[in-house]
Amino acid sequence: MSKKREMIILEPDGRIRKEAFCSRPMTCPYCNGRGQFFSGIGLPEIECPDCEGTGEVIALVTIDWKPNKEP
Image (cartoon, rainbow, N blue to C red; front, side, top):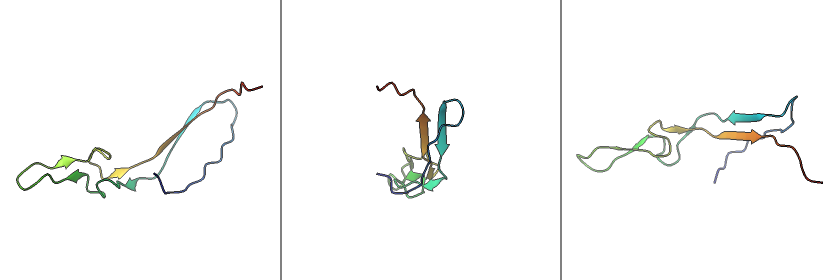
């Protein structure tokens, strides 16, 4: 589970719509920023499935404003 803490204040501004926020790039925790795994001597390296070889990941948070239909 994620450990980084950032606060997003949610207040609709004008018309409601779908919004997205992106975090700063962070070192991939699965490959420790290497972007790949070594499969053995003489064998090809395996690309990290989480960061797809970049060594970094970002968090994409999507907010979808909807009408409140509760009484």
